[in-house]
Length: 166
Image 1 (cartoon, rainbow, N blue to C red):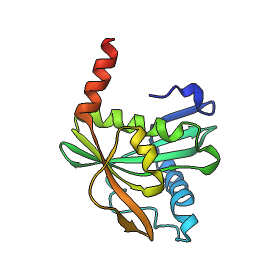
Image 2 (tube, rainbow, N blue to C red; image 1 turned 45 degrees about the vertical axis):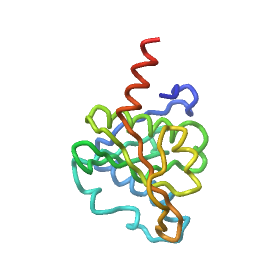
Image 3 (cartoon, one colour; image 1 turned 60 degrees about the horizontal axis):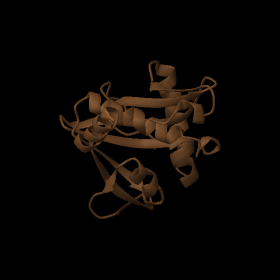
């Protein structure tokens, strides 16, 4: 996991706990992912956001959400990461990486064997650096090319265990 020292101080990565945070998360998600596409508020949510079993992670800086991402179960062995979003002013500071490491570790705690996500094609390299690999053919969503990607957590867990033994 990246050191929190590279993140704007003080930044906290955690799951949301309050309903007011959920509303701020949706506003944040819309600002980063949908508003630039000219889409109205409400398009940043889907049917899974109401499920209390879905994990919504946030990066908090000075009591405001500056980054967010979601993890949900697709099966007992497969988790799905979606809506990874960091405010433009806070990008390239390690916040997205910290959110992803947080969700990868959470996926390991939930005993998922794999995580999957759908990346915009201009973000593929970011996810590759985290160990995700392209899966299948690209698709277009909201007029933007996307690529499904997968991370084998059994391999990721083996690498973590191996490095901790050295």
